[in-house]
Length: 118
Length: 109
Image: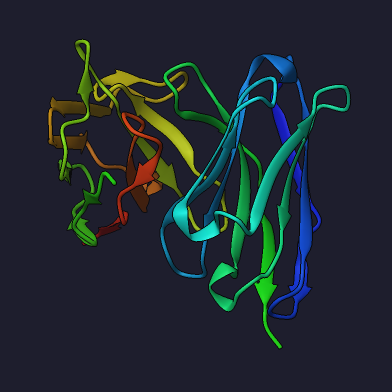
């Protein structure tokens, strides 16, 4: 059974940093591209970043470029999102998602809440 | 950027048909496939894949759900609607990076 479990969320002040983790199991992690998708309170889904299966390629939405870094450790089957210079508008539930071949988000974690506030 | 537009809400009666639309500002077709997908999200839960490549049912999804469309116009149909279908439905394109529609909240009359 595919499982994605996020951790590392919490309350952080504007301008500070936070690092999210996503532990994957139930599939060969190193075979799949992975992504982070977020959802602000009472709002819709928003793609944040994607990393290729081997970590060689990364993609970001414009609003997080230069502030967020997606990475992975295939030996630990873990995905990361380093978030720097956080803003109030980054407040959201962050989901880790597996990218299938098409590419679409075929499995999702339960999500982790990040609140940016002073 | 590819922008996806959905109506915010839809109310239907139990047992009736629900049709949710999604329009894009650019063509999402490529080599014979439409890179449009649909997800269902219930309150407090993560999204779940329903339909991929516009019209293909994801694993374990009941045949009451169907999708169609191509180019810039797509629809998700639920027929007949059951009480458990109350949720927000999102379209999503993967033709050029990834973007979601704003979501359509399905409610029962």
